[in-house]
Amino acid sequence: YQDAIRTLNTLQTNASYLEQVKRERGDPQVQLQAMAGFLERTGLKVEDLDQLNVIHVTGTKGKGSACAFTERILRNYNLKTGFYSSPHLVQVRERIRINGQPISQELFSKYFWQVYNRLEETKDSHHASMPAYFRFLTIMAFHVFLQEKVDLAVIEVGIGGAYDCTNIVRKPIVCGVSSLGIDHTSILGDTIEKIAWQKGGIFKHGVPAFTVPQPERPLEVLKERAEECQCPLFLCPDLDTFEDDDKHLQLGLAGDHQRSNAALALQLSHTWLGRCGYLDTGELKDSWQTSEAPSRRVPCLAPAFKPDQPMVQGLQAAVWLGRNQVLHHGPVTWYIDGAHTTSSMQACVRWFRQAALNEDKPTDGSEVRVLLFNITGDRDTAALLKLLLPCHFDYAVFCPNYTEVSTVGNADQQNFNVTLENVLTRCLQNQNHWNRLMEAKLTQDPWFPVLPEV
Image 1 (cartoon, rainbow, N blue to C red):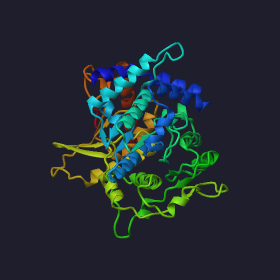
Image 2: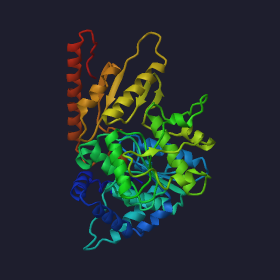
Image 3: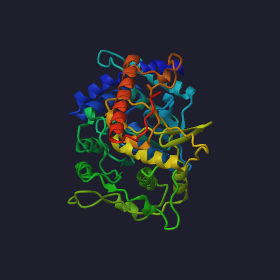
Image 4: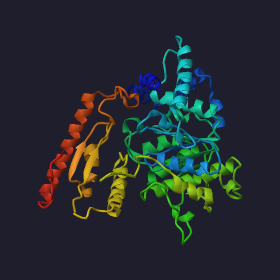
């Protein structure tokens, strides 16, 4: 397994891959043709992916959670599920799951070498390259799901939608768009409207799609994208619509913001079950053919339905590690989240303050709050840290994106896109941002307690 991961890591040309995406962004067909070429070199055709009964999900925030809810619901119908997501937390194999579990190291190694060797064997003057890291894993996931004969595959988009290599799927059963925001601006554009245009690139002719509530203008862009390819697009109603007056739906993922992700998951799973013949959806089936007259500027509301028991239980049993997660370890309580945009950080702060309020406090009043912070990419660290001020941390620790002191023996944690020096420099920059925020806070409020960083 470690040999497979080390070889996979040689494809970690993410920076050059993103540059390639930027060069090709004017013509998504160039991207998809390249992906199709790699796929065929491994023995698959694009048409083969039709067998996977794909649920394709994009968005800026919450798409992973929506996928996790959806996969867990459908597993409750005794279906064999595949789930492809990114990034991984600890091991690469987390990205490819069957029935909710990461594939084993043995299975990962088997399919990795199968795909890698086929690509090596088909190199010639016209096909001299190997796919980059994410493209390779996407191709490998398709192989795993097809050969392991899953009933469906929940596919989370990597970046964007229109130019993402997962968009090689021609005939998904249903598509979804989670909450939109500003992220990956160098690839997707610097406005939420441009980002919405990219996300809407996964829509397909005649395939129903659902979106959670969005700001007005990006919602209009999604509607325009849907009309371009004659895709019936619907707006998910609030989760309240699915609840009885005296009984609220219980969610396995914490945070109020998960309610919109759960509502999206209900629509995706319900539509998939209906279109694939596992559930009699009655009159709702007719509504999937058209979402509204083209004159409407925004999508119409999706029809409501009463979730059955497998759906209710699926929402409650959903697990998505590292997102609004609380871990107890001796005297330490960890509150873990992966927020990396301003809106997701705001949601994280709301969740943390409420969760910490509900936690038992030491009777001697000795509670200490420590921020452990790490960030990657070109995100605005100062803006994100500023949002954390209401949490009133006593100490702040800024760490690199490693789970071990040495990654030599753990290829899963290796990242060749940045040097150790770059990573440590980023930590110092983050610390400086925090120090300035603390100094400004102290100036504004002389009674605000400030303790030194660890």
